Length: 570
Picture (spheres, one colour):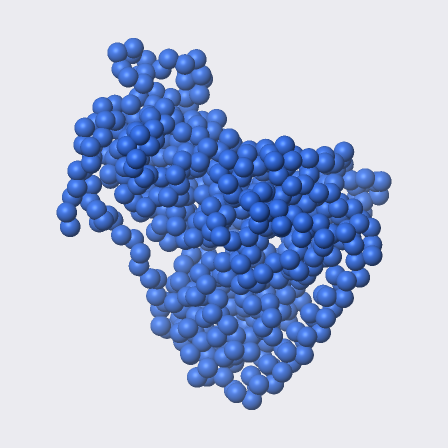
């Protein structure tokens, strides 16, 4: 393959040329001097490059790159400012790490030189105080790779290595620091392979013996169960999971789902688990297949029978980056679910007792109908209650979504009342729980799929943590209209529930109000979006919510961002 030469003037310009050549569409965040100058050069020359999106807070910038990848499958770059910008981005980097989402994080770094003869040498007061002994140490536990650029001869190798490590499964963020004076160094030509000779795409196939062993366990089980959180990252894996469930009439639980993992209309769908909830099917199962799920159950709350056999399937089925994770595993299947599940379905189909499968399927269908009727009744029972209930609010959101709508949910949406409509149309938060992810991620999804309607469903806490003025500014400046729905219950409900769970008979349980969980007095969030020329409404009555959502979506479809502030309760 040919190597090409690209004319450049500085190392900063060479970095941009490499991103351009390697298919990076967007650069989200706050750029440094030579990168800014390089962007201006590309613009003056009428050449395309990474689309630079100014994001006035680094957490939102990394969250946008996260959301863009979740929607499109294409890795993007975020650029942050030195140590302080890295600190701002750290929560979002942790989210991307635990969600196994590749993001190229570029970080400015104080100049190495104090010599006035060196272009880019330190000449700003903060550059001494912002330097650390080891800038990469701030993120090292949560990135797959970190490095500092040292010279012009490294540019191609370093960018390719960063992308290679980010995309090699299990995927994740990488971090590259860029000293100011290194970026400013003169460079006349960049030589690079085009296309890249550093290809990492390679399917991970399972051990055939493990497939056979797992199929034997599932086929012989009377109460087989599948638990997953993230199999829906690959739509092909969802179809394969449906085929497996059809082969063996196997129930599926979604545990704090990050994606749309399984059709909610399918009779095998047994429900959802959030927070510290316990699903009764876990303790009743005699065989459990765990697929891309870090916490399939809580040992402190659910005791498996000694005879229950457990299978783990995933590219990284043991979540090797977690310091501690103690789950039994009788059969490991280390492979991509989209590759392994069709093999497993075929092997199960060859072994099952068809009569037993047929009887189990009939029972699943009956149970599924009863469960869905109960869920619907629960939502409708809230339509006349004040303040607005979460199930009713979720039911109303489901009523205004269609197959072209993408929902980005940071905690409040109740999937029993608003089940995902399919793969690629629902994204939930990383299990790391870095609050403030949802708004930025929704902007990234909108950037990746501008023709789709995007709804971000956020708690009042997650909206505040998202640095909303930064996100609303990006939505306005970049023409990324979306609907933000704030479930405003005036506090951190999960923190209160966790406290009462640990201390059911404690002081907080007997107090009039649990300390340090209230977000009162609640701001008028609808006024914030209006400051950015958006449409804002406040809803306090359940019967007015459907019309408010319709008006907000009309504004979004007309090109304006919108926010609906729902005063609600669990």
